[in-house]
Image (cartoon, rainbow, N blue to C red; front, side, top):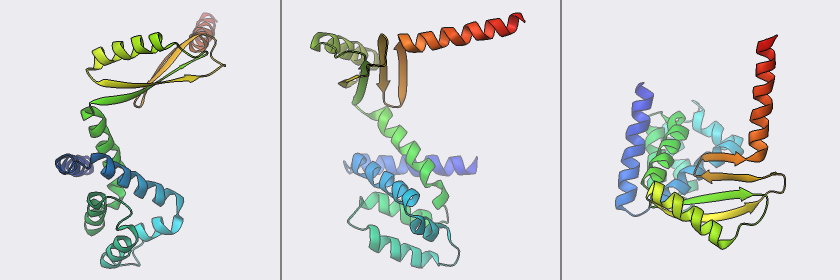
Length: 184
C-alpha cells in the first residue's frame, strides 16, 4: 500500500509540474526511454540496483549520461528515486504517469482494423461517433488485415474492441466446447 501511495504521489506531482511546464509528452518520452534503456542494457540495470556503488556515484554517473538526452523533469525524478532508494518504483510511476496523460488528453489516436480499406465517409462516421462518446478529438488510422473475415477491430489507447467475425467465431467455438463439456 505504501508503495502504491508513493507511486501515485510521484506520478501526480510529476504530471502537474509537466503540465505547467508544457512538457508532458517530453517527460513521458524521457521516462519511457529510461525504462527501455534499463531493459535493453544489462549494465545500466545493474548500476541502478547494485549496492556496490554509492547513491551519490549513481546520481553523478546517470546525470552525466542522461543529461541533455532526456527531459530534465524525468531526469530529476530519476535522481530523486535513486536518492530515496526507490528506483524499483519507476515502471509503476511511468505507467501511472502515462495513464494520467491519457485521461487528460484532448485528443486520442484510434486505429481501426478491417479486412478492406474503409472509405473516408466510413472513417469520418466512426471518428464522429467516438468523438461524441468520449468528448475528445480523434485521430483515426485505418489498418488492413486480410485475415479478418469481416467486422472491425478498434484500438483506442490501450483498449481493444474486437468486433470482427473471426473473434465472434472463436467465441462461438469456445462456447460450444464449454457447453459440450458441461453436458458430459
